[in-house]
Image 1 (cartoon, rainbow, N blue to C red):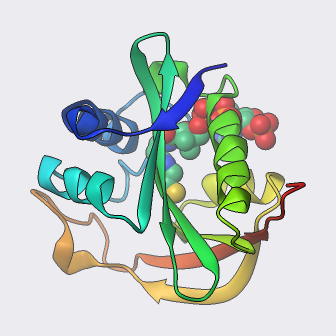
Image 2 (cartoon, rainbow, N blue to C red):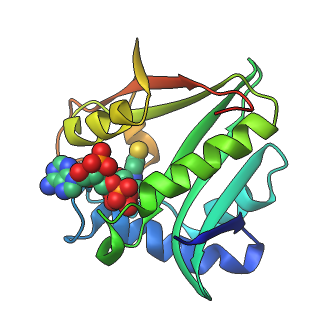
Length: 173
Ligand SMILES: CC(C)(COP(=O)(O)OP(=O)(O)OC[C@H]1O[C@@H](n2cnc3c(N)ncnc32)[C@H](O)[C@@H]1OP(=O)(O)O)[C@@H](O)C(=O)NCCC(=O)NCCS
């Protein structure tokens, strides 16, 4: 399995490329390509995340190669938000995503938070099921999809929205 480290500013271009290919790539078992044709994020947005003191971007390394990433954003309610999750498409479905998620939950517990939350597009049932198999539960809350902030592209349907999932974490994870 890869090693997981905290991202540095110089990782930003590689991370943007990875995230774009994972969300929009034709390979991989789950992508957002049927729902969106935007570019997901740009380098300035990734740099902002890396430099934000309330955000930790995690990078999974296979030797010197970046093969995955995710972020934790500390919230004011004692929870942490998990997002920007991507695994190199050609390496998906081999357990790398599961490993990154587990390592990140351990990091969240060390931050002293009680709970990891995430939002998933409701129209991605296979991904929601994957998180449920990892112990995340739907809270029943939904949130609007940010149609107006998409970069260089748009949504392919107008009924997208997020569901919220949560998992309690503790030092024992
Ligand atoms: C979501 C993502 C990070 C998961 O990473 P991964 O390395 O593929 O995940 P894993 O290898 O640990 O797990 C693969 C799972 O897919 C399942 N799977 C494989 N092929 C599948 C298919 N065709 N349909 C449904 N599930 C499938 C496997 O059974 C396995 O689940 P299990 O461990 O519960 O049995 C990765 O697929 C990705 O980058 N997707 C694009 C970006 C994205 O959607 N990010 C999440 C946004 S919230």
